[in-house]
Length: 580
Image (cartoon, rainbow, N blue to C red; front, side):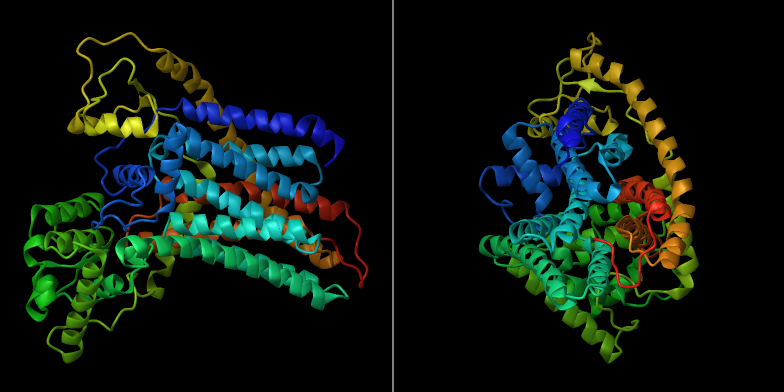
């Protein structure tokens, strides 16, 4: 570490991190206690963990989503931290890890501080829709942490053994948390695999390539081993508690097979976008499968019709066509199975879905019901004819990331110090679990016990503080938007020129590799969400795009700096190589 870094970098960066966490602690939470598939679920599972009951009694929701965010909620509650501040703390730590990892390649402390600020001051974390008790608040910092530790692992792989082992082990541990938080973890794998291949290609330039390859592969292998062990611990805990080793039952082979079997039945006529089941296809399943017939009554209940109506509302289908759409049918299927008594324990549920899949697929193969070819997953087959639509939605996702339209802090906030939060209601329990006193006024809060005071109270100190902070925060978000747009306008031509210059000068520039890998991560996330948006469910929105914003900031800064370093750097001789 340089004297300048010891003198000013750490105090300044830690001070900025503290301000970031302090701001987050004073933001109004979007409290959605009725959200049984998101906010309320994570609070319930987290409180079960805090009480030493693992994920609590088994229901159809217990293993519906990854367990790492509920664990995080439990830790934050145990420490008494407001949930938004706890997420901001992890985000700041991950930003520090990445900035210090890239500092030698960035060329100094000033550039490292600028990168730290770019990834720390992510405006999406202060937007209304993101201020919920929801996984992206942790998933985005974990994405940043994985990228930062991957850079450390690459940089240290040929150095002293202990730092190399620590970096690889840290990468593996962060990958485990990343994988256990959400279900679409593979979007980051192309960038990580490309990083490994680039490191191996760089090692090939050295005379001692065999030894360097072994060290690189050993680091990658250790990271993979630690990640697998971390995931395995959660699998073991679920097996001991529930009798199944599944992390998320939406990935369970039997459930996936049952969903695929029901959605391969061919409807008698054309259907709308994202439709996976109709009343006609379900009637065929009920007639052909005794297991499916047990779901007939639950799938005719108001709960299922509510899922159908919500799908029609989202896709603006009026009058509603009565069909089940992908984003909601998977939940409706589980709710129906639970109503039929099939989720009394995890093994019973798994056996039921296996029986359902076998019976429906057998009817399809025997020709008793019209079916499409067998499917082996929940996602529909890739349709090349839809590629233009997917690319169009991908472009829309990239536009949202770059321009951040409509991203602003909430206009209003209510305080539990002056309003009746319904202490004996789900709202009061919800807010006490997340240690927040400010929340955004939402009509649905009245459904769960919140009532405004009859006489408007004078603003409390936390309300006054937020009112004072909101306008400067909105101005900072606008300044960030302008800065990132300017950097991106510079980064795209810089990347092209840097690639040409690196080729002509035969120079391996680490920052160019970082820019390429960060860009690959952004494109992977955007394309995955675009594919989901066109084929299955609404995917292009700022909440789902949030994890791709830090890699976009890295790309925006590193591409111009890579061009600058290549322009100023010497041309390498044929037998030399640049450090990595």
